[in-house]
Amino acid sequence: MSTSFVGISGWRYPPWRSTFYPKGLPQARELEYAAERLDSIEINGSFYSLQRPSSYLRWKAETPDDFVFSVKGGRFITHMLKLQNAHQALANFFASGVLALGEKLGPFLWQLPERVTFDAEVLEQFCAQLPQTRAAALELGRDKDARMNDRFWLDDGPDHPLRHTLEVRHDSFDDPDCFRILQRHGVALVVADTAGRWPMLRETGLADFVYVRLHGADELYVSGYTEEALDAWADEVRGWMTGATAPDATPRDVYVYFDNDTKVRSPVDAMALRARLAAGPA
Image (cartoon, rainbow, N blue to C red; front, top):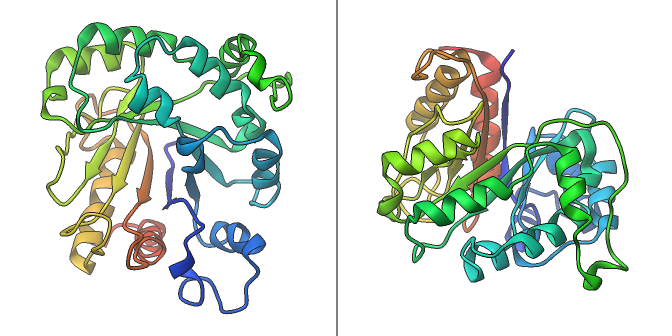
């Protein structure tokens, strides 16, 4: 049975304090507070630097049993290496503690900068390196370099599939060859609403899940979503979950994250969409 996960990108934002977060709520309890009201959160600190295993273990402990984290891949891989010659960086990333999330580990998000254009050979080689199971990620993590010797987590545990999704920001990726590569490796293509700044590609049949990032309806990272827009997104999510709008009629899990945080819209919009999905079709 397919499931929807609705959440926010990150949770530590000073403007949210005394607005979304109650006045006086200790910062250490913000994740717990957000997780009680949402299904999932994108961990985006992992984009800026490798996090420590202790952080992943703490985040796992502070959230409900059915909560899910997506993890944003490091910008060193996506923005500096531009997906090329990434084996060592991927090994360090998967050794850094992400696997400590266990059953709460959702998709890995790989977000490209707008200056990166589609190159079939580069994308093929990168996707081929992405571990498709927890066991494969552990094996890859064992290739970590010496810098990780005092901060890695590679404990054995139950094996399970891993999910990966790619967010692109250049029109050149709107290419059947790109879609074929992603589908061959089971990598989803992010459906990104960016107020028209970057392409919104709706190739939702490439993997066994759909991943949506809502960066703002009218103004990037700022504007919220109207009641009508949220109704429309709820209908879209239901269509993907039931398979009604899927090219192959296959139901898919759907992950939706609001990243319009500048004016404290993310948690408000996420809770509103979550309530619509819980209520069922209008």
